[in-house]
Structures are given as C-alpha cells and as structure tokens.
Length: 131
Image (cartoon, rainbow, N blue to C red):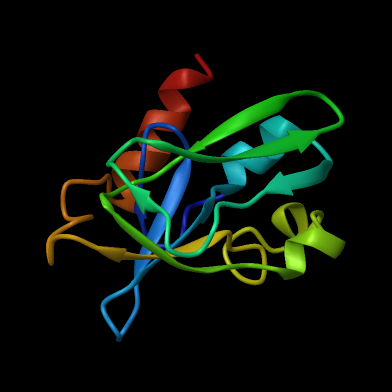
C-alpha cells in the first residue's frame, strides 16, 4: 500500500485537504479512493460561490465501476474548481494529489482541517479497512 503524503490531512470518506498559503483549502480524492473507483470518467464540480457545510456533499465522481459522492472536509465557500477535469477526468487517477485536485474552499474557520486524520492515521485507517 502506498504511503499518503504527510503534508495533507485526510477524511474517513477518502478526501484529502491541503491548507494553501492564502488560507484556502485544496481538496481532492486520495490514492485509496481513486484506486477503489477504477478509471474515472466524469467529475461533477460544484459552482464557485457555493457554500458548503462540513461533510456536505459537493459533487460526484463517476468511474467505470461506480458513482461516488464527494464530501467537504470543512465548512466554507467554494472559491475555485478544477476545470481541467471536464476534459480530462482521468487526472484524478493519474495525479490525485496534484493536477487531479477537485475544489478550493475558503474555510469558515482557521482551524478547519485540524481535526482531520494525519497521513499516518489515514494509512492505518485504510489498512484496517482491508482486513
């Protein structure tokens, strides 16, 4: 199993969150999630300006195997979406921690993602799921 990047925080729903220098939070799906989904064929993105609640659904990822909801790791407002996913949804598979990011959120709290799992805790969580 691949180790998750240590500079990110993780949800039990398999989203990752990275705090950016400008205070926004970039969100995507983890390697574990994209691996379980298989080949991603479509990503439904929220509208910029949409207000999200913590753990609220903000979009959908469709793959050749299944459809999966996306959940916000924090409360806040969508300030950017990854428009590149419209023409290349497979970026989620090829670069889930890089070019395959999904949204950027302006959180309502400065400690919005502090409660999320560390990479070590997330990797242990995923390992437990596979047993």
